[in-house]
Image 1: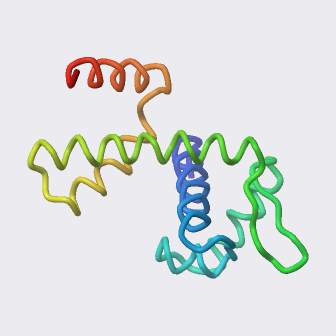
Image 2: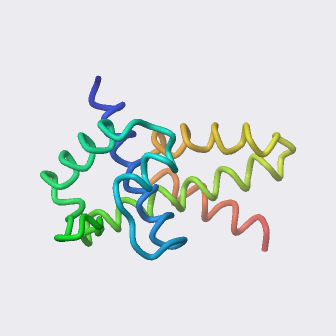
Length: 126
């Protein structure tokens, strides 16, 4: 697995934890596996990597909690995802395809370029 894929995967897991926390309050690995449609061993490996990287913690009841760093990455990724999904859907792209494409786009655009694009789009709407 190359560095970009690992990075995108890490962002996807953090984003999933953020979304699930908003929906359910508390999140366990099994919730992530169901949400992302991946195996429990895949989630276990990702959780270990994310804990080692300082992006999340696990309490004694096996609930996952984003650290400040993890929350920041998750929120940036989720914001990009929503922006691109909405933009593509408004342009007439099928919603399911818009979700898939947005998931790819959120990982390849730099934060700086995203901010400029978002600001330009806001200015255009006003």
